[in-house]
Image (cartoon, rainbow, N blue to C red; front, side, top):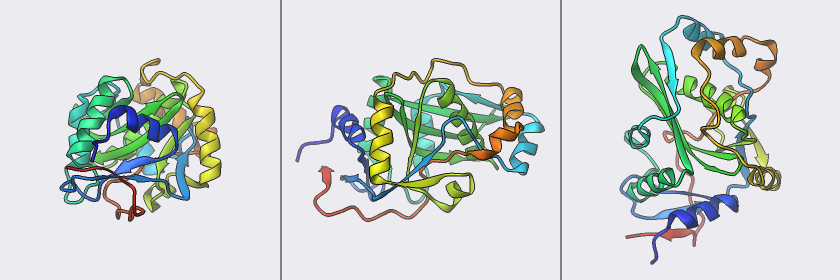
Amino acid sequence: MSMLTAAMLLRGYANGVFPMAYSADDPQLYWFDPPRRGILPVGGVHASHSLLRSLARGGWSADARPDFDVIVEACADRPETWINAPLRDLYAELHGLGHAHALAVMQEGRLAGGIFGVTLGGAFFGESMFSTRTNGSKMALVWISDHLARCGFTLFDTQYLTPHLASMGGREISRLDYQSRLGRALRRAADFHAQPLRSAEALLALLRQPSASSSSTGVKSPSGPMPSPPSGTVVSGS
């Protein structure tokens, strides 16, 4: 059985499907095309009062050029994960090609959380996030949602919607609606590094604006239950 390549992976994303494994030990990958897709508005966030208070206390910073492999490994470092070795290798290859990026959040200079995803045109496909400190992953979501808007992205695909993401304003749309939004996003030219990240102070000022409470941000969580892949969707194996 032929292995999935980076080029095949990008074609899959462009066609609205994405790969996952059952577990870290599973050598196979499966294509997923759920009937309902999770998305979030780009550039608008809903932050809780506690998150705003934490940001206001200071000590937070973010980096849009962290060690990519470190962020992916941190996302996969848990008892149950869908990120297996083949996927880690593919993500690293996509990163080298400029199609995968990560964002790290620090608190008092120490890694507190992060997120990574795949980019194609004006679409960002959020893959996974992690948190080592309270609010770490939430801060990463807030920062990257704003950053994507500043860099020309129009679609933030969260793939699935969890209660956690819904609490931050994530929502589901139909497959047909998703395909339409994806098509428009793919026709755009966006660059993840076109703009610098906002400072914590500037981000806080943005979040405190009344209009910022109308939208939010989220991404697929690796700690949630794995969906069952449809039969016949195996795309790689050992």
